[in-house]
Picture 1 (cartoon, rainbow, N blue to C red):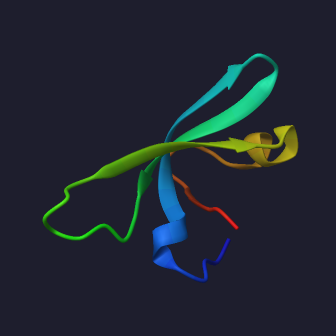
Picture 2 (picture 1 turned 90 degrees about the horizontal axis):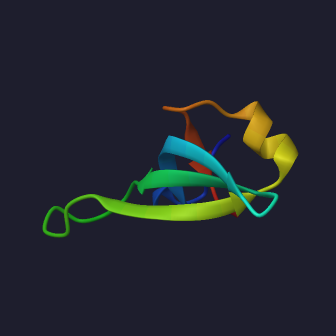
Length: 61
């Protein structure tokens, strides 16, 4: 998936479900050299959850 801004993208390092919702835990791209790694979780649909693997890049619209 291509990204319009690298700050909206990240590498999936964990996938999990909670309360019948689907999430990617991601390491964000585009942080500056002073902030270090930035991590965040994003809720996705079941279809998206099943179509991505760990280590792949995912972009949030």
